[in-house]
Length: 509
Image (cartoon, rainbow, N blue to C red; front, top):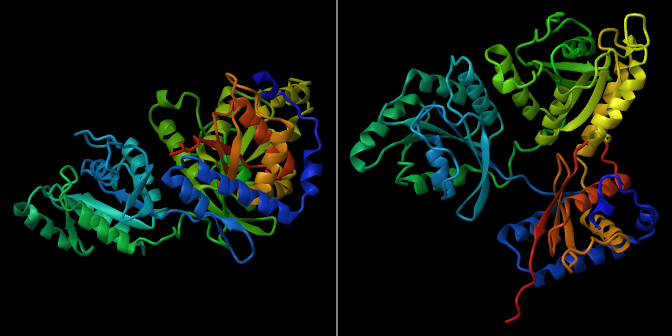
């Protein structure tokens, strides 16, 4: 039975017509009845928060406020991960007596005084770091940019180092609340060591012992007093240029694309693959709008095996992708679509960014320079086979070198970003689910049939839906729901995520 809902299943129904025929008041009444019926099921605390957290603005648009972000930064081996574990009340972050164990930024959901917030653990920050330490430093800098409140952790027993002084300069530039955390103060007799950190000019040091928990509660009380209810950074700033990451494997024409878009030579372009080493942010006017383009170093195959510049360039690419809102993946049409190309596209999907596919060097197809005279035919076959999972991504055929069809890139970017931000009203979502399931119910499993009790959109960027169900939905059936969502609503250019929360009926007392 499961096969009937696998990826090649085509539904022959009039779902769109039936949804268009429904009355808006009926839709809302149905959704409210479904929401009320959840009271008969064992819900968890965050279920209630999800259901209650959806708000409606003055235009009638629904949105879910973003949790405030608290970032923990500092040089290696000062106890940042130990502090994360203490705040979470469980051992989540890796703690080891070796500097630099935490390489990347890791985000956790935390709670204090009935306030929930996102806690970001970062790698150690070194000012003149080279190699892996440099990428760790970049992660910390991004964390500072994307935080509402910053905890700067210093090893009070060691005292302020030259590196700490450098971090202080970085932190002074931010207008955000910064808490100076003097760690490894295990008892009152060591508090004099914390007092010495007043000299850093960041205000009062908070003496704590992350390992033993001493002073952490007082620190968190103070942090919560300065933490906003809703994040000011975990959402796009209205009116700011949208951020576009140009990514792809080496030598597919990423720098040429940026240069042609900017109308001048901004980035060194060389026939040698991998000329670009650092991400270059450029605010460029294209199609009458300002965009922030991030040109990145090419991603090489089997990155973890590479040493030196290519390895770190790939890490910087990941950072640029995380800072971006939409990714333009550049593919060279004169070469077969490779495993590398597919992996790069999968990186975009994993990051949850909007996606546009730019097929570059299109002017070279069917020209004497191209040895394979049937390349266009084989390219279409490769796209059908290797890129079927992103058939929803806008596709632009361009020549970055000559500027051919570059004007088509902007509408594709705008479409992808608009859909990345799209929210489906709760009433309409549940009407869609009700009509879909009545026509195509989930197959029986062991004599039982999982039911969808209620659905809600938990977030945008990308659109993420949560379904409350009575049992586990087959992956094939979830993909079926995703495909039908795309048929009914415009989601071109954005991933669509469908998650489940399986809940059991309350036992009668």
